[in-house]
Length: 253
Image (tube, rainbow, N blue to C red; front, side, top):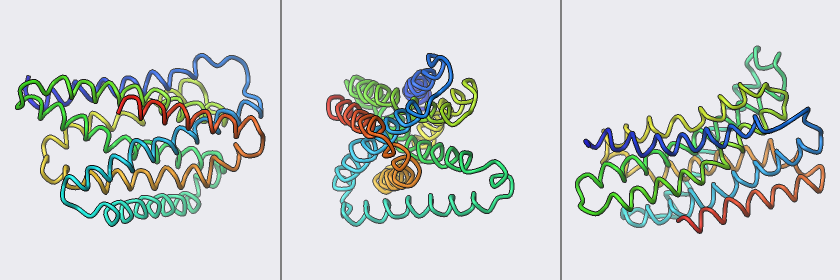
């Protein structure tokens, strides 16, 4: 199998796990109460915050050190850049007439989707590069497969973290699932692009990971945490979401 095909196969698995998590919307029955809304939003916020720290910032610092970069400088610049990009997106969405007519819920959904999609870009790159490199290194395929399995299992709650809040905001099940699944579609795309431009993409990985973390943390703080914090069940769900994602990241590496 050539490197492009190998990278495509590895990242396709991680994408399908995102889609599987997004499919949880079809398990929801009946209307979504205000209490259920707080629980969904809190769980999603917890998952996203934990992913920002344990999937992006900490591995990004290790990767920056391995590449001979200054970790604190690279990650700080990337983190702030990601937050600024999301602030700019928010300002742009507020000025779009179509979005103004759609209301605050549509703007919030757009920001959440953008943040999680941005987060999936460096993950797809990491898996794609691992599978491509394994083609040239005897015995390395097991490590690449373990990486894909770990990221894929982490993507399951992330897919749910996108689709469930979309459902609770009033969007239909099919559309909520589709957008949740599409947030992971960037992984195969950027996995292949990383192989095609391996040298440049590898050097940019730590900054991209930090930028994704900054974007996710800004969105959770601005759009999700306030709603979750309006009830104790929302805060409990946030802690549970954080704990689940942290456990998976630490256990799966």
